[in-house]
Image (cartoon, rainbow, N blue to C red; front, side):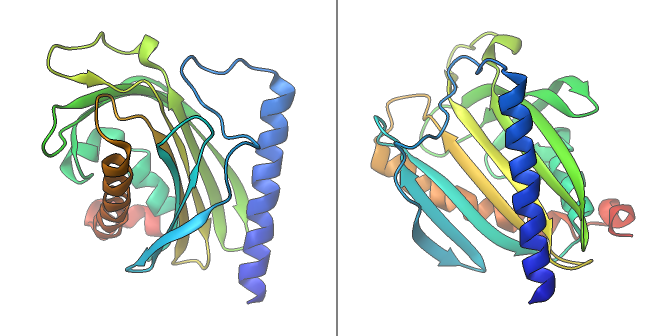
Length: 229
């Protein structure tokens, strides 16, 4: 219990420092981005399946839900980060991911083009700017990955592929021990087309569970054994 409390405190400190840095930087919000504010409703638990707690909340002016999910992964945080920081491998294991190309790469992030192959509807695509940060924690490094839309840095829209204008979220990887990680996933995204909100919200919950299943399976592969040391 003491270790969990200490880890939680580190997470709070990390997020507070990150927010302070962003506010002091005074940067502009990327075009098309919607940032959660006081008009968002409180988080409500909507599902608890296979050790993944899923919460949702409503943003003012939008019928689409923002989702927050928390689940344990049986691997150290650096192994989980190694998977998430290898987007070119996403098509081999991430649900619905048909194409993922790194357009720019820096020490603290990347610009990445994604194309999704979704059931019943045409493909969707978008380009994201992703950044990551790391601080030491009592059980290992704590990672935060954040992304926001950057379609202006990606390829032009393609015939037959619907462009998603809003997609933002984050992963917080907080080690609960030297061998386990509490992963917190936030996602808010547009549909890229005329999909009823109640269907989009339901499918998002299904996709979240599939993402956690995919990560838990992928981390067992030998290619990530070096990151578990």
